[in-house]
Image (cartoon, rainbow, N blue to C red; front, side):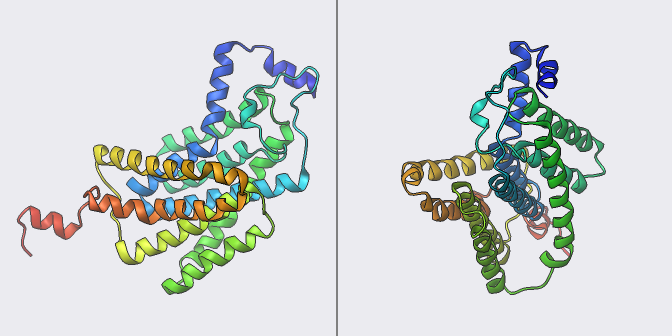
Amino acid sequence: MVSFYQAIQSIHTPLIDYFFILLSFLGSEPSYIFLITVIYWNIDKRFGFRLAILFLTSMGLNGFFKGIFNAPRPIGQPGIRSLYLSSATGSSFPSGHSQGAATFYPYVWNRWRSRKIYLGIGTFMILGIGFSRLYLGVHWPQDVLGAYLLGAVVVIGFQKIDERFLKLQMSLGLKLFISFLVPLLFLLLYHTHQGLQMVGFVIGFTCGHFLEDYYLDYRERTPLVPSIFKTFLGLCILGLWVWIWHPLTRMYPWIYLPVLTVGGLWTSFGAPSLFRHFKWENPLKEERTSSLGVTR
């Protein structure tokens, strides 16, 4: 196994190192959060909601399996060069970066399958992010392959559940109850710092989405300039909120649960409400018709 790493790392240069560090960073959770919020706030909120739940569920399962297997990383092994160690938290199997890519990109290209460019980008990102974890010496090959398999299973399973469950007609109260109950049950199995963060955000995000759909009906598709304003302001407020509570969460990890619940609620309900206040949303068809002076 050491000879494998020596072979792929034998051509290393500072430029190649930076390239694979960048690829690995693009496979980290902040990058996916940025992409999901761009989709939810600017392109397709219902698809963005499903994408967020799918991705967060996959990452929650990844952390759960990491805790079960508790596999050591190749870091520190003689003959293996390890870089970007700040991205190598927790145990080794399965690779979170690889599983995130194998979850996110197939679901996106299935949504826009008519645009072949998404298939090319997705394939490159899945293979590139997985290989970057090997090149950087922070994962074993079985970590990457196992993550690919688990990501595929999660996507297929989610699509089956989505077809049957998420399209059921339910009252707002029942939707909110399920949004609290299911993540809290998952917390019984995954009660780590990451689990508290994940469960808190899922509770807030799902509740906020159902409230937005019922009370607000935010119209997300906007031109480029308002979309940039929305994304920048929305993420700045979310980041500031989490940063304010960071010192307390380090001492009392349970605070992650309410803090990230509010963060998720902001993402799916608070931010769209603010965008409506600033008129950063697409006008209704009736409003556009009226502004053109068209009568029916």
